[in-house]
Length: 346
Image (cartoon, rainbow, N blue to C red; front, side):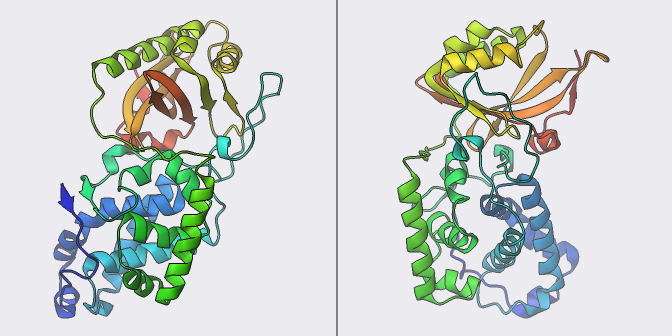
């Protein structure tokens, strides 16, 4: 386990930073790329925008290296650039969420609504992009717990500055004075923002429970469940899927805005949609991990070429050896981020 350094530790002398070659500068800043990407993802709720902002952060750091005063660590300096870029971006973007936090559950009698393709949906975050496990003994939320979908849903309800303060204080364990310097606020202002952010999260935990996530490999029982689940999809076995679900399981497929609850409701939905007709062999699943949870790359066969094409990243939640939630993000552009191919052979 790696202990994160304080933002004020190990500052580099300004002249050293100013005089570095591009290769030397990259050697110092690149180790923070994954940390910064996870931070930007928590702020924005989107992997693709987070990647872009980390690139912009490192570019601006290089362009402004002569202004680095050495009062804080290089890491803190990079976080300041990244956080301010996120805040600027959030001024022009909509809040991201999941269908279950946006509206009440749909029924089988409700028509399936059209896709909402506006940038309002959370995106899944590949576990392979997380930095090595880090311990923050005083932090309220562990680094990995704070990447869970449940936490992200709550986090996106906060105004941007409250969001930034909460992440810096309760995830990264920065001091109030350090956060104040980064955001150019007073310490009382930081404490006020943090109080309001914590209050909002406390009042909203009845809507979405923040769960502890694990990086451990599935045990034998869980692997057996996942194998059965994969087989169910490949055979389009409706009854087999229903058996694997909790009584109050939930199901959603953003950008479709509706979501469904209850194993029988979900069974009825898939029977007339994704498993409808002659669906055996229609789907293939490739295991992966997202947001500290079990996940799959979902592929759908193209009847013309017989190949399986990327369809979406599916994140599942397991409780008591049953499936509690299935969320399929139909974003094929994320497959490379998960090291998943776009096309599978038959």
